[in-house]
Length: 212
Image (cartoon, rainbow, N blue to C red; front, side):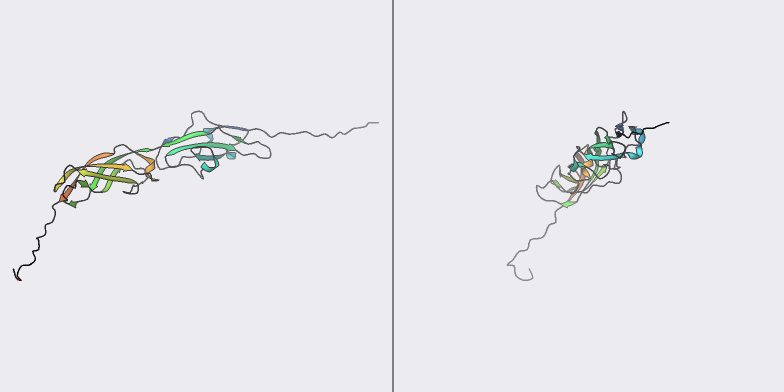
C-alpha cells in the first residue's frame, strides 16, 4: 500500500534590489542659452534589474531639500542638483543615484552701443542722460530693459554745448530674473551725445512808459 504525506511550510521572497548610477563622464553643465537642460537618456545611466521607463528625475536648486525641489528641468543660470530614482514596487526595492551637481554658468554679455538723450546746456552740469544700451550676447530672444534689468549713467568731458561730444558711460546689470543670466564683460564704454545751447529770453523791464 502506498501512502503519501503532504507538508505545508512558509518562505520569503525578498524584493530585488535594482541599482542606478549616472554614466561615467555625464554632466550636462553648460553656459546659459535660454534652453532647459534635458533629462538624462538611457545612455546616460547605468541601470540593473530595472528599465529606463521606471526612472524618475528630480531637480533641486542649490541643494537636496524639499524646499529646493523644482517642478521641472532648470533653464536659468545657477547651481542645481539632479537625482535619478527608481521607485519601490511590489517586487522591487527603491534605488537612487548619488546627487549630481549641475551648473548653468552666466552667459557673457558685452555693451556695444549707447544712446544719449540730447539736452540743453546747464552750467557746470556734465551729466549724460542715457536712453538705451545695445548688447551683444543676448540669447534666445532675450531683451534687457533700462531701469529694470540694467542701469546706465555717465558724464561728458565738459559741460559746454556742442555736437558729438565725448562721454563715458557706466553700465551695471541689476539683480533681475533676466539680468542674472548674464555676466557683463565691459562696464565702461565711450559714447557721443549732443548738448544744445540754452535758450535766451529777453529780460522784461517794468516801469517804462507804455509803448516804450
